[in-house]
Length: 165
Image (cartoon, rainbow, N blue to C red; front, side):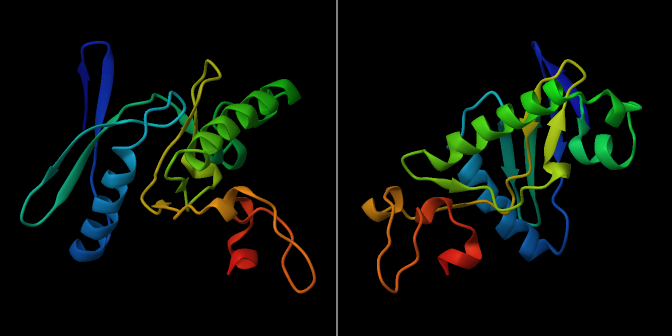
């Protein structure tokens, strides 16, 4: 369900999956979204928690997902993605992820994929679906490079999960 409020459109996001699992994920998503204000990340407008469900009211962004464009040929669109447009998409996406990672309490998106990158016809990008996101506990070592004999070399906050485990 979508509606217009002032100059913003909003959309109700209904949880999927079993009630308990879905409620846990949605509550975690609320905690993360309450800490995010970025123009390239879909905004949480409001939420409602009742006995059997949790509902999120999200900013509505008239768009297609990158997955739609690349794999479903939505605009005749894949062909319309020039190198310059692809660069702008990547740049905007990286700005959003950089914002999440560099917050005082860094946030890991947890589900980066083409379906969670929204593209507007005007070239604007939004990152969505933070349902698997989580706060990364921050220590001073997470912002520094580690290395040496017997140690992994790299910056832990930016390492692939399998390297950091």
